Image (cartoon, helix red, strand yellow):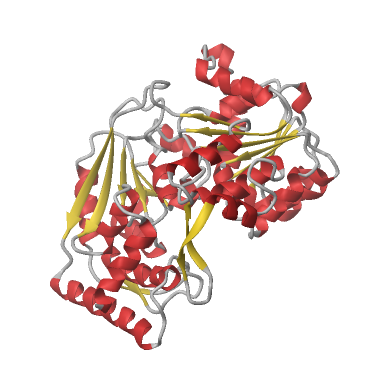
Length: 463
C-alpha cells in the first residue's frame, strides 16, 4: 500500500508552495509552466481545496492511468478518485461516478463532456496543456466545451512553446476565453507577428515576432497574471546528463540506395511542379529515416511518415541494432530505455533481444521498471513522453531513430533525468553518418530551425 506524504516525511518545497498559492489565488484560468521534474502533479493536488471540488483531470493516456492515482495516494489520500479507463461501456459507467477527482485521458475526454457542460466540475485541470496548441483539432474543440462551465481551469506543462510562440494562443484561450491574447488567432497573429514564409497559394508557412525580443516580452507581459514560470535551476537537484552521439556507417550498398532514393524523391517533386514544402519534405525525410534505421517499407504510408502499423518491410542492414547491443552490454546495472520511431524497429528489437524486451503497453510496466524487473523497455516517444516517473529503474536511454519534435525529445529524455535519479544519466543517439539523422539531431539541439534545416537539406539535391 502506498504511504502518504506525511508517513514518508515528504513536504512541498518552497517553490511548490509558491505555485500552490498561485493556483489558489483568485478564480478563472491559471497555468504552471514548470520545467520537467519540478513536481507539477504534487503541487496541483496540494492546491485543491473544498472550493475546487469536484475536479476533472485530463491528461495523456499513460499519465492518466499510471500517475495521478499514485500521486493522489501520496499527497492527497483524503480525496476520492475515479480513473476513467477501459472499454467504452466501462468508461461511460465510470464517468458518472461522483468522486472528488475524476481522471481521464485526453483521447477519451468526450466521455465526460456532457457532465462537464452541465457544471459537473468546479475545476478542470489540463495536464500537459501543450497538447492543446492547435485550435482546429477535435481535441481542442472538445476541451473548449469542457472548460466552459468550470469556475477554475488550470493548465500544466513544461513545454508550452516547443515550436513557436504562435502555439500559446490556443492554450491560453482554454484558460481565459481570449482575455490575455485576443479572442481570435487572427487577432493574435496580427498584433504580434508577421508572415515570414508564404506559399504561392497564400498559405503562411512561418510566423515570426514583429519586433523580435520586444514582441516576445509583450506576449509574456500579456499572460503574466495567469502564468507562473519556474525552472529547475537552483530549485531541485537533477542528475548530470551526458548525450552520447553514436555514429554508425551504412553498408556501401545501402548508402548508395539512400543517396539514390533521396535524389529520386526530390527530383520527382520538382518534375511534377511541386515546390519542396514542409509537408512533402516530411514524407521524404521519413523514407530516408527508414533506410538509416535499417529497413524500408514496401510503399509510402498513406497516413503520414510514421503511420506504419501492420505494414511489411525489407531489412536492409543491422548496424544500428549491432551498436545498440554494444551499448547494452556496456551498461552496469539498471534497465535500458530504448526509444523507437517505427514499428519495424520495435519488431527487429524483439527479434534481437527476445523476452528481455518489454513495452509500455504491458500492465504495471512503470512499477516493474522501477523495481528493476525490466531489462529493456521499448517506447515510442508519443507513448511515454509526459509525466511518467522512470528514474528508479535505470539511467541509460538509447534513441534508435530521432524525432523531429523537440517536445518529444525533451519530454522523453526527462523520464530518466528527473528528481530522484541517483545516478548520472547517459542518453545515446545512434545515427548513420552523412544522413538525415545528423540534421535531425542538429535541430533538436537548437543549432538550427528544424523545418528550415529539413527544407535546406532536401533542396541541396535540387541544385
